[in-house]
Length: 325
Image: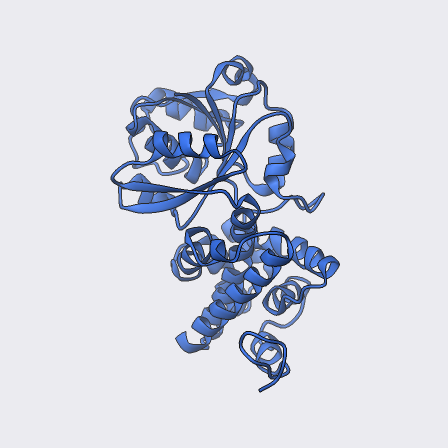
């Protein structure tokens, strides 16, 4: 395939490397002229994954990529959720689109795939830390789309012995998993920062998965998606990986850093964008998301030390019902 990858961040860069390894013709497109220059001159992205040799990957600045996207077989979008709507609106051509972005649109509260009008859309999600993908370590992901033929074709073109891909037709569930797990990871990081222990962290992750599933079902998703790679798999990785942005941000906040300071230190923290969106969507749907509500309270200036007290002090219920036992 001829592929254009929009967004030369860590994940976009690693994914371009993965595609080249499968024999595809890949061009990385970014608005950062220094990144594009370094890619073309040295074969490396000196800002993201500088140790990774990107042999065979070309690079273009966004302003010069119109002709490229008019003729590619696949457009891959790997930009932050805040930038996704504008990026796909300006994307030339009508080729199928594969989104690597995990989150929701903070302006419209929409799932990101719904913003790519006039073309078939697929979403890739799962426990996929870019550094490990770049190093060739084994990983797995799901490719979700309402277009089963597109998902199957991408599965065949992307999968390798190091990167196993599964098809999942539950696009709603996969996208909500990608947004929700980042919010739970913020809370898990706060547990780390507060020193509350592994018992507390495991309990929070489990109840976080329960609320992700509950909201997913109310939104038309399938329960088994949340038990799979996009749900439980990605949640585990995001909550435990020491360098994951969302977990790190939560840990800093747990140690007394403000959310704004954490964002300044780390950069894009998708859970901070997704939390208020998910909370608003859930309120409109009449679904209770206790962990997400607690994260929103902290992001709004609440005391992080109150997180555990509020969650542990909730009304006692059965694990899978609303009735106390």
